[in-house]
Image: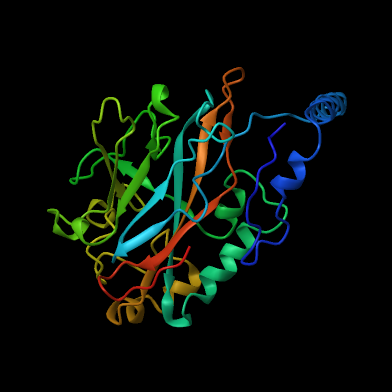
Length: 284
């Protein structure tokens, strides 16, 4: 049964579980209750899945337009010693920021509403799509097999403090061709930097449109699969007036070592930011 943890369930953190209160209960009682709960669930035929933690909440930082970071949960109660954990999946959605982020905030509230559910169903239901990953800036076929997770961790160093640096501007705009990407060092013992390049989740035959950058009206079309119906009607204006924004969520990802079933954390909001240079605002 997933281990209880503290997560925000909205802008004000309603529904937050108090860890300090939980610790006041004696260990034998907590252990007995957990075993009894698992027994009841198994008797009822309900599946008990191993716990996967998401990225560290509120760890996202942005100091340069288009560039941001988030942190790996390397705690003992998170993914630090979790043999099922493999990395993080990342989902995105495009927005017209003419409403100053109102549509994003509505999506965010629905995705993290109480009860907070693990998995991608709420993200997909709100129109988010998974980032595609590539081994080079020239794109072609996505990384395969497998293309999961989007950013991975070293099996031996999950207890390390890992920070994932994402570039949707700045350094990304200087590449040839300009391409969004992420870098991270999964081990402080053997500090080799990993890099993966990001593409839009669209028809693979549209090679010239797979990159997020540069933003222009020849790359982004109203009928693209990752352009929502409400964005399609204002897409041209959004691009011409530097209002094309992206919302990003990340989830911890793993495989059950016994059943090989995919495991997910709850979705964690990472950032809502502009894809067009200095015309940006930041919130998670």
